[in-house]
Image (cartoon, rainbow, N blue to C red; front, side):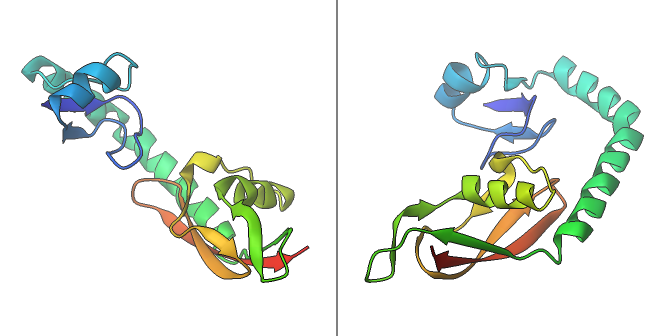
Length: 147
């Protein structure tokens, strides 16, 4: 089933992308929640016209994302957590803690666009990826230390 996304959906695509999904996922989740519409020929024509009109706005959004990426390029974080005697963390470090640390530095970033690939359950150095735009992302190194 072909659908047009109305907003960014993690692990699927970005707003105004035409993607193919299984029928149940499209009919039972994406369309009822307003995240997508069926990609009929009329909807595709409307999308093409809308994208033509919004091209310059999208370029400005991309430039803003690139400038934010430049400011985040040199940022490295240190996250202190409670640690057991063996060096393992009670719980884990997630994108929520990374977003909080970035906010303390003055960068307000939505936690939903921060991706931590591996589960952070031990003290050490890791990397998080911040996806600011579909073409712009930046890696932020962070270190987990004992509290």
